[in-house]
Length: 436
Image (cartoon, rainbow, N blue to C red):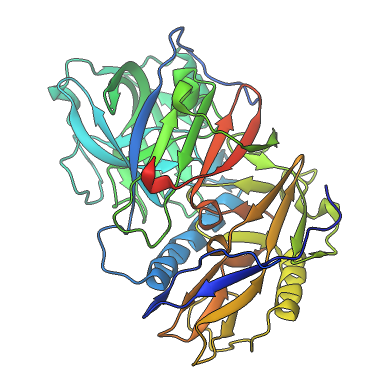
């Protein structure tokens, strides 16, 4: 890791009501069970959950942050105790991007939340004991000729954190805010774009509780565990490219298999956390602001002996969260190098904002570099600051957390992010995601 980075200045151009940030530098876990011998590559369009709303850029961020705070609690939680004294692993749930899928024969189309923080694929199913409202009809397995329940002796049933056997493999899958899905584990044909894949194991949820799922008809888990879509496909790679949060017409993209490639990428290894085997942990070694390497202990982002801590990359959390002491160092240095008054109004909900001069057309903020093992990721300005002339503020889109740190999707905008589960690496490459 470099001890320092060249000092660079990011020019933030002020637009009419909302300011767009433009850069102008001035200076294994065991992979799949039931692995498939034939590889399947496909492309799926992604849509932000707020893409249909008439929101400003800051309003979109505020809505996403509200969801993100619940998700942060889920990601940070490790286990929950039930009355039976059984401990159930908790999973992230929720997310910010919807992917279009089709289920069954004949195929019925649904939008499901893409979630790199959990494994289970599931949708709501008839007959529904307790189901949330969703924008499409609930899946009826009786109308599909390719539906079948999975037996209790199946590998996927054995991979469930909690299951029981009564006429098939029954599951309970819990999320960190006590949301859950409960039903029968089944196999079905899933269609992604123009590619149909038979016998995908998924949860047919008949009793689904909790908030945050109603944007879609269920979730598609893309974690590192055996129940996830990637593991079931036996694919070594997937990637996504997320458009800017204010790009209301742009389409983000998920690429799986041979289509998941990136040119001129920087690469860092994935690391394992046996206590949280589904998450994508990275080794973050330091952070540079301008030309100052922050005085952060290297152990700050390490996985602790009890499985807590660590630094994960996540598509479903919007802003980046840093462990408290690291964020304090970042905040102090950012204030020192940004020649603006700190805004104390709290109008945005972000941890650090500055007051914009009323007559300014440009402001300067220091460059920000994340030093991962073997890869220095130099972020463009629009990936860590947001400004609004109506509110008169410019804010850092990074917050403070306790324990786990998370690299959010705001920091991943307009990048191809490749997850290679065979080589156990993550790669980053700049891209215009709305043009892929």
